[in-house]
Image 1: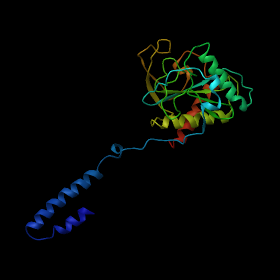
Image 2: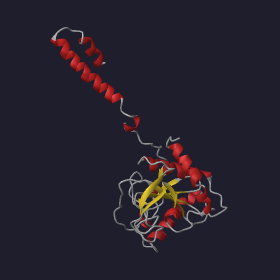
Image 3: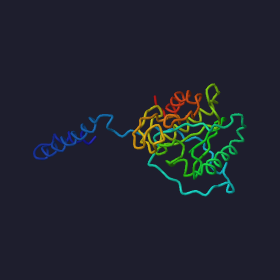
Image 4: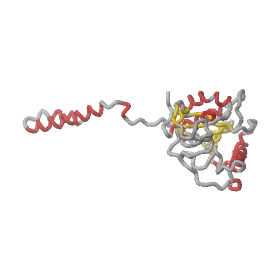
Length: 251
């Protein structure tokens, strides 16, 4: 170490020894100061989870069914996930999922006159994850899924209806956890934590401009007065949060 070399030089007689000792003192002070920094003050790598396989929009939306739309909008990051159900039939073959998503897209961009499907992602009962709203799965795309809380959030929709007593497939909840773990990990957010979000609409559970404390992995009904994502899926959210945290290598 440089400090050790300087200590040896301190044995040199005369002016050289004085200079060497002065340099030695400065070097030792720098080493001690660096080692004395509290651990919490050092940079900590964010908790990241592996990116799951995500089926692109092109699997369910062809050019003939595409609705003209403006460019995607983006936030600075995603710090919360809202879980939804699509309130559609459960007894589908997973090969039919692209058709079901295309039907949802047609309803939202047609009768509702939205510019795109509102959900950022959709998950079928076999655990397949589909890209929903356009803009890039790796980017913080502003969705249209939770009125008042679309900014800095991602919407994940479970294909089906999960009211009280309806079984929620494990493959589906595992996929939701994996997707949430990855997406929240990009901002270093713990899926079990609470976060502060500012409401942008008076029709949400909170008046526009209100800073609300909500779960980082929330149900639709946490931000909006609705029965979505259904009592059965809502009951599974604590377990989904725990799995997502484990996938981020959190204890």
